[in-house]
Length: 230
Ligand SMILES: C[S@@+](CC[C@H](N)C(=O)[O-])C[C@H]1O[C@@H](n2cnc3c(N)ncnc32)[C@H](O)[C@@H]1O
Image (cartoon, rainbow, N blue to C red; front, side):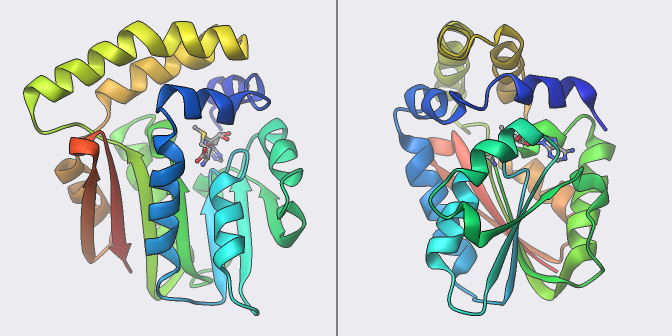
């Protein structure tokens, strides 16, 4: 288990969502809703949101779930899960405190797995990311889908430069000021510019076993939603 990342997320739960909304000018809300719309389109009875954090995405999933669908949510940070439990639909979610590298579920359990803005966090190395993706693949049913919403790299070098400059100037000071966590927002500002472009993430997903992988770019590639099929 990565204690450093766990510690960072124990420092930010109360202000985590506010900082995201401010730093993305509210776009994270729209992107999350778009990812959830794609995620729920094929129905199913067992849905899992991994690295659920304060449970925003899991809550949107509950809102869209038909009767008979159970929404599960996993995270290894108790303080983040405690915030998630307070949400309006917190009672309707089956929370599990676990490292997503070793999910406490049998093979072929879920119709759908979602992850939002956390793939950078489980990317402690390329091998570690593949290991986590293989774990998601293991607990998905054949035909099940994995929806990945994450920051990405704009294709245009000019837009990429502007976005990276924005991150360098604003993310650490604003995030630290509001949350009180210098480490948390130093970490965020370092991981975004280093993360994979959308095509490279597609290759990693394929290498992890997923057979069909499509993605859509959001805001010139600032973020992307990857949809992968087992
Ligand atoms: C940036 S937050 C994202 C939270 C949420 N998905 C969202 O959309 O806002 C990353 C979350 O991933 C969790 N996390 C990171 N690595 C993890 C791991 N190996 N196992 C379980 N949770 C992990 C952290 O505790 C944190 O709550």
